[in-house]
Amino acid sequence: MHAIARRALLIGVSDFADKRLARLNAPTNDVIALRGVLQDSSRGDFDDVELSVNDDFVAMRDHVSRFFHDRAPDDLLLLYYSGHGILGRGNRLFLATTGSNLDTPRDRSISSKEIREFMEDCRAEQQVVVLDCCHSGAFVEHTKAAALAPAVTRETFSSHGAGVYVLTAADAMQFAWDGAELRAGDAAAGFSRFTSWLVEGLEEGAAAPDDEQITLDALYRYLFLRARSEGAASTPQRFVQGGIGDLVIGRNPFAGLSQVDPEIIAALAAEEFRTRLGAVAELALQLGEKGSIAERGARLLLQRRLERERDYAVRTAITMALQDDRRPEAARQAAEKKQRVEAARRAAQEKQRAEAARQAAEEKQRAETARGCESADHPKIARTAEGGVRSKSLFGSGLVGLGERRARDNRPARPKGCCRAHAAARSPAAQWGSDGPERRWRRPFGARSVPSPGKSARAPPSKLSRR
Image (cartoon, rainbow, N blue to C red; front, side, top):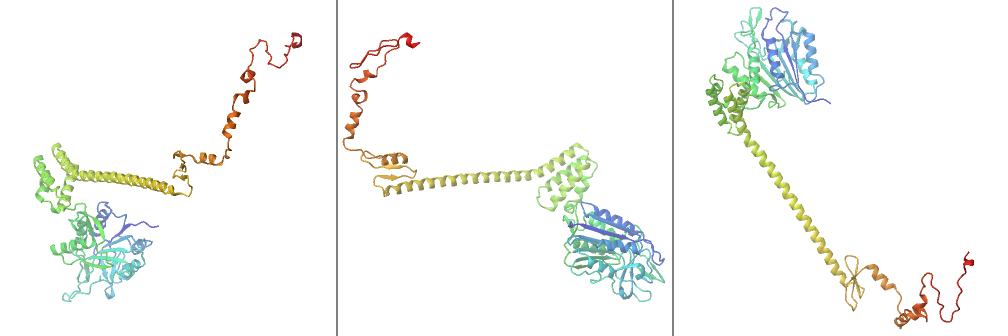
C-alpha cells in the first residue's frame, strides 16, 4: 500500500564534452537552491528531492526511469531540468547531457519523446515538468530573424489520462548562432533568471503574497509578470493537461505581509526601542481586524519579532498584544463550552420529564384496569389489579388475600346445631371427666398420695424393693 508522497527530481548539467555547447555556471546553483525550497517543511514540504548533477547519458536516463517507476496514483511528481536544450530534426527537443553532441543529439541526449513515454507509463496522476532551457527555437544566422517553430508545445509532454503541468523558460539559456559556435546568453553566471524567479516566488511567497497556499497557476502568473517587468528576451510558457492548475505546489509562510505598511515594518526593525514600541502598537490595532489579510500579516510580524527581541519593554508589549489577540478566541471557546453544558442539562431535564410522564401514564392505566375488574363474573368477589380480591359480603367489603379466599371457600359446610355440639365438647365435664380438674392434679414430691373416691390405695414401694 503506497502512501501519498511529493517527490522531485532536479537535473542540472553545466559541463559538456561538445565545445560548441558553452559551459554554464547556473545549473548547479539552480538545483541546489530549488532543493532547499522544496525540502522546507514550511514551503514546498516535499518528501523526497533527488539531485542529478553533471551525469552522463546512461546515469541521467536511469534517474528519470526510476523516478517515474512504481508510483501511487495520488503522488505528486516534479521533474526539473536546467541546462542546454538541443533541437533535432522536426524540432524535437533533446535535454543535453555531459556527453551530448550538437550534431547527433539523439545519441547521448534525453529526448522529450522518451520522457513522455516514461510519464505515460507512470501511475501518478499529478506530474509537473519545469524546463529552464531553450524552448522557443534558435535563430539561424543570415535568416533575417526568421524563427523556427517552438520546440515545446502542448503535445510535447502530453500524457494520456494524467494531469500534466509544464513550465518552460529560455531567458538565461537563449542561444544564438555566432558563425559555427553556439554560445550561452547573458547572465549565465550565478543563477539563471527563470530559476531565480521560481525560487523567489516559492521561498518568499511572492507568487501569492496574500494567500497561504501557492498554486501552479499563481506561480506561472508571477513568472510571466516578472519576465515582462524586467524586459526578458523570452516569455515563460505553460501547458496544462488534466485541469491541475489549482494544484498546490507550496505554502506561503509570509501571507499577509503585503498588506502591512512598509514604514511599520521598517519601524519594527529600528534600533530605538521607542520606535519599535510604536510599531508594535500599530500592529496591535491591525490584530483587531479578524479574518483579514492584514491581521495575518501583523500577527506574523509580531511573532517573528518576538523571537529575536531583547528589550524587555518591547517583548512585554508584543506578548500582551498577542495575548489580547487570543482572548476573544478564548472567550468564544468558553461560550461554546457553556452552551454545550446548558444543552446537556436541558436534555437531562427533558429525559426526566418524559420518564415521569411515562410512569404517570402507567399508574393511570393500572387504575383503569382495576376499575374495569369491578364488573367481573363472580357475584361477591372482584379481582383487583394487584392479584387480590375484594369481598362484597353483607358484613362489608375489604381486600383479602387470594390464598385466604381459597381456604375459606374450600372448607366443608357446617351442619345445623354444630355450634351447640362444639360448645358441649369444649365443656369441663367432657374434657376432665366427672371429677373435674382435680383428677389431673399432681402431688408434690414426697407427699402421700390420696386415692380418688372408689379407687383402692396403692402401697408405696418399700426400701428393699427399691434396692
